[in-house]
Image 1: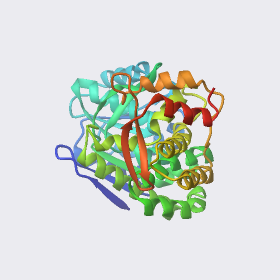
Image 2 (image 1 turned 90 degrees about the horizontal axis):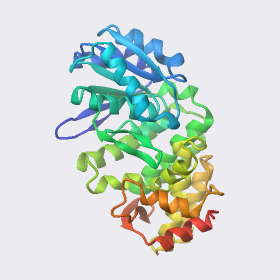
Image 3 (image 1 turned 120 degrees about the vertical axis):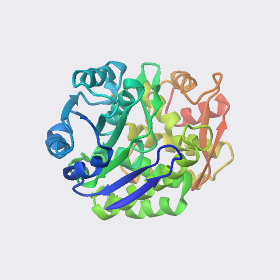
Image 4 (image 1 turned 90 degrees about the vertical axis):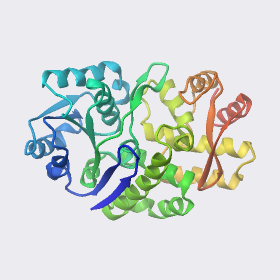
Length: 359
């Protein structure tokens, strides 16, 4: 088992990475001494791992399992209300613990419910997708979508611990595995060129769900994100760089109703668009753009998503939570392994979108 420490001054925690961890969840949550536990999962994950987690957690405290409808389109306040109702019905108090068992959607919903129940109770992340294990389970961002934009409603609420059981990745559909690789590529592009190159070399092993390669990628991505979060917990500066590819990606998700593309697929395409925009602004060479596009394609992710409205995309990005006074900030690449954030003229963004097939 590997561990990554998230060194936040007020709420440090450990990320545990390895196999067969869910069956031992009691050993990880016991030090928290919860009075009760609510495991929040979805209709895909609960039948696979719900009983394993439930049996282990019950060795620590009275435990209930709540099964939600999965999918980004259900990441709403109404779904958060279901979690809150379950907490009230179970008599949860300030010493209770919420466990998010599932992908990023479950983690965001369960974490947000924990953040606002009794003004904040503890929660643990037990991510079961590669995307969640390398990215969304770490850093304390919780929240839900609004019809006008992704993650517009939420709170910073750090988990008490993260339990990344790599065995759960064996049941991931290939499309979900590729979606997680978008975030792996993102971390290398923004912070570690050597990691980006290693990911390219390891892509066949990662796509084949090789346990050693996956554990190494999860650990390095978590190290990169943990370092950034420790330096800038609430996204006042450096943490915004973790949004590389996400401004474009979030617009793709919003314009397609949060149902056509997986988050990682939209981010993969967003990485290509961010690279193209970086080149148009004179930051990176065309060869770098082509290398990034080739990496995204090799991970079996879309490099172009055509047929969307250019005007609607620009409008969606103006409503992004990172925009200020209607001006959109983009994370761009100065080189592979180093990212910066800048406000970009609409004309340059429109040129990138038009070249990618937006009309």
